[in-house]
Figure 1 (cartoon, rainbow, N blue to C red):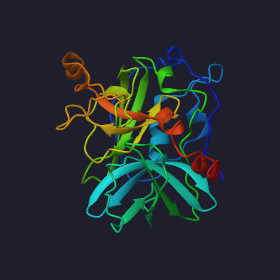
Figure 2: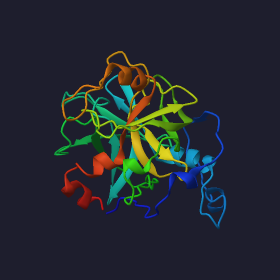
Figure 3: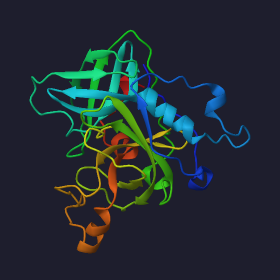
Figure 4: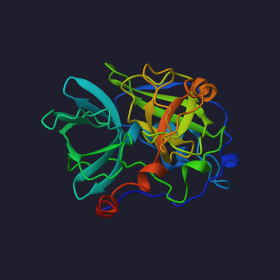
Length: 267
């Protein structure tokens, strides 16, 4: 029973790696060798390409009825895998079919995990069972979302709607409001390629490949939600800035609000 935690504190200054181009891959598993994962043994810094390869191995596609979204593998209990995604990705109807397609193109029926205790946060958990071995995203439990300074480099991944290829785009943090929005988003980021419909629920990784959040809202949304969790609305000038960024739910907000019994069972 485990969720993978990487107990390594990384500062924003330690992540100053050159920008990389958007990356689209076929929906297939990617082998990540030890030599590819570490760019400099003395600094323990990981290459951007390694973060892209991690995204390829931990991102899943979620079929919801006739619609699609994305998710990330975060835990395992026996042969049962735990997937983190957005609440808006899965429909509210209890009887709607949920299917997970893993990086090796296998499909599995999925079920919701209830009793999340995350309020109105745009977060959901799914489970599926398989005797195959899949890589789990690494979560650095020593960090919080405020360790992500403006300018921190990242990659965002997911499956665009009606596409069978994983899209991975580099970017950087642009907005970090002190208070999360009502839907739990708190990390605003810009990417070199668009975050599209269908990429919701996909992972946001730092350049070391750690899971720091999940995609939730793309830039210039039709119905933006820029009301803070305390009920106050963002000022008009701030809304104009917020609309230019994609927004994600930081992993910190999930870990501090999730029902601890769920964390314990997958620990």
